[in-house]
Amino acid sequence: MRSHPILGLLVGLPILLLVLYTLGGLTELGDIGLPTVPLATLLALPLDLWVRDLATALTVGAVVISLVAPGPSAVLRRLAIGSAAVWLATLAAQLVLTVSEIFALTWSQLADRTLLASVAGELITGTDLGRVIVAQGLLVGLAIVLLIVGRARMVQAVVLAFVAVAAWLPGLTGHAGMDHGHVAATIGLGLHVVAASAWVGGLIAVAAYIGRSGADPALVLRRFSTIALISVLVLAETGLLNASLRLDGPAALLTSPYGAILLAKIGVLIVLIGWGRRHRRAVADGWAADEQRRGVSSSTFLRWVSWEVLWMGAVYGLSIALSRTAPPGVVLPGDHVSVGAVVALLIGIPLALAFAVPSRAGRFTAARRYPEAVAVAGVVTVVVVATWQASAVAASTVGLQVASVLTIALLLGCGVVLAPAVASSAPAAGIIMIGLPIATWWIERDVVGGLGLGTWSTILLAEGLLAWAAFGPGRALMQDARVATPETAPSSGVESPSRQEIPG
Image (cartoon, rainbow, N blue to C red; front, top):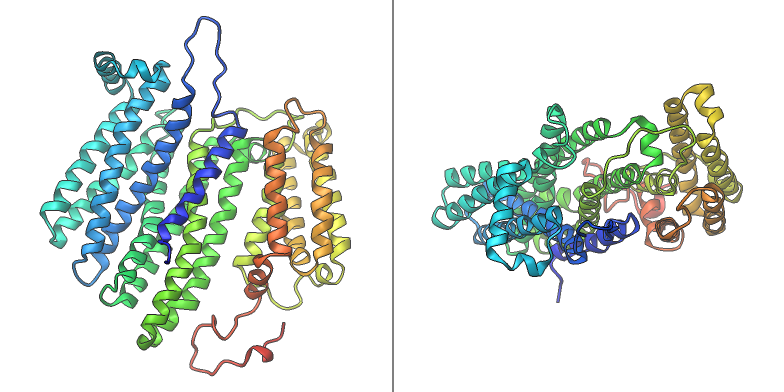
C-alpha cells in the first residue's frame, strides 16, 4: 500500500526535538523562589507550533490549488476544511500552553477554569501574542464556515484572503515583534510564512488532486509551478531580509546556534530548488508532451513528491526550532566558530549545490584526480580558518566582520571543491569523516560548554551526509546532476542521444 506524501512532513519532528534538546530548549533552570515552567509545557508547545504550521500550509495550499484547478474538487475541499479545523484546534492549544509557559502554571493548575480564564484574558488583553492568536482563530473559524457553506470561486477567493492574513499574523510576534520599529521584519516574516505555506501546502494539495484523478492534471501542475517559483523567490528575499535584521553581521552567522540553523535552512532550500528542477524535467515536461502517459506520470509524480515533502518536513522542523531560539547578541573578538556553521558551510551547502546545480565537464578536475589530497587539505583548512577567525589578531587586523566574511568564503569555497571529491572517491570521504571530529575537538577544546551533545550530534549529522554522498544514493544523484540524461532532459525537438553517448 502506497503511503501518502504528507507523511514525509513527519521527518521534521525528530529534527525539531533534537535541535531544541541540544540547545537546552527542553529544559528549564529553576531559580530559588521562582516558579519553573513544567517540562510537559516545554515539550508540548513546540510540538503544537509544528502542527499549527503544517496545518497552516495545508489549508493555504488546498485553497490556492482549488482556485487554479479547472473545476470544483471534493478532495481539495475536504483537505482545506480538515486542515483548517486542525489549525483552529492548535491555536486553542497554543493559547493554553503559552499561558502555562509565561505564568509557569502546571497542567493541574490549568485545569482550574477560573484561573485559566483570568490569566488567558490577561494574555489576550496585555500582549500582542494573545491578540494575534485570537485574531487568527476568528479568521480561520470564518474560513471553515465559508468552506462548508459555499463552493463558488468567489467564496474560495475570500477564504484565501482570510487564511493568508491568518498565516501572516504571527509575523507581528516573536523575534519580529520584539522591536515595534522593525516594520520590515514584521512584514517580511509574514510574507515568508505565507510563501512557504503556498509552496509546501500547494505541492501536497496537487499530489492529493492528482492522486484522486482530478481533471486536467497537467494544467494544474503547470499553474502550480508558477506559484512555486514565485514562492521560492519571496522565501529567499524575505529570508535574507529577516536574517540581516536579526544577526550582528556575518560574524553572528558563524558563531551562534541561530546562525547555524539559518545556514542549515539555506542548504535544504537549495536541495528543494534542485529537486523541483529535476521533478519538472522528469515528470511535468513529459506529461505535458504526452498526455497518454498519464497513468505512469501520476505514479512517478507522487514518488517524486514524497521525497520532496521529506525535505520540506526538515525545513519546518528547523523553522520551529529557529523560532524558539533567541537571536544572538553582539559578537566579540575571540568568539569561536560554531561546529554547526562549519558543517553547513563545508559539507551541507556544497553537497546541496552539487545536487542542485549541474557542473560542466572539466570543472574541479584536480578534485577528481587527487581527491584524497583535496580531502586532507579541506580538513587542514577547517582547523586553520576556524582558529584564525577566533583569534584577536584577525579582528584587529582586518576587522571582525571582514574576518567572518573571509572565513565564510574560504569554508564554502573549500566545500564546493570537496563535494566532487567526496562523490568520486570513498577514501576521500573517509579522510574527511575521520578528520572532522579531530578538527572539531581542536576548535572547541577550550570552549566553555563545548564538545557536548550538540557538538557530537552535529558531527554525527555531518558523517551521515558524507556517507550518503560517498556510499549511498546521494552519489548517483550528484552524478546525475552533472549531466542531462535522456530521461530528464527537456524536449527540444531533437532526438536525445543514448546514455552511452553522453560524456561522463
